[in-house]
Amino acid sequence: MFSRHAEALEWARCQAVREWGPPALVSPVFAFVETRFYDASMGPELQKQLLAFERLMDPAELAARKLRANEWEDECRAQHAWPEPRPVNLDPGYLTEAKLILASTKDRDHRIYLEHGIFAEGTLYFHHGQWCARPWTYPDYQRSDYHQFFTVCREYLRTRYRSEFSPTAPTQAGDSRDQPA
Image (cartoon, rainbow, N blue to C red; front, side, top):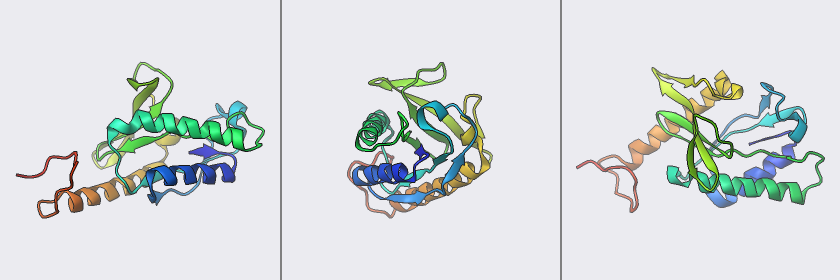
C-alpha cells in the first residue's frame, strides 16, 4: 500500500486487518522514489508499506482481494477530503517460497488474466538464495530493502509450512498442500 498521507495508510491497514486478519509482518515505511508516474493522481513524496498477514491466502483469492482493495481505494477517496484523486493505492499479492505475484487491473503481455478484469503478474522469483527481478518488475520491487523484507516473509512462510504441514502436525480440514503418506 502506498500514499503520501500516513492517515490513508493507516486507514487502509485497518480495512485489511478487519477483513484479512492481523499482519504477521509489517515492513518499514519506504520512500517511494523510483518513479514520478503517480504524482499526478497521488501527489509527491509517496510512502509505501508492505504487510504480510498471519492467515495464509489461497492464491485463487487474488482477484477477489484486488477487487476488494479497489473498493477500499474508492471508499477512502469518498470518506476523506484529500486533494488527490487517488489518496491511496493498494496492490494485493501473494508470496510463495519461489515467487512474488501481484494483482493488477492493467493488461500487459506478461500478465495472466484471472477474472473480473484482474490480472496476475510474476513480479519476483527466488533463485540461488536471492530475489530476482523480471524485465517488467517495477523499480521499487528491485530494491534490496524490499528483498530483505520478502526474505523475512519467505522464512516466516517456510516456518509455518514446517510447523503446520509436518508429518506430526494434525491435518487441518481444507489444507491445500499434500500431506505426507
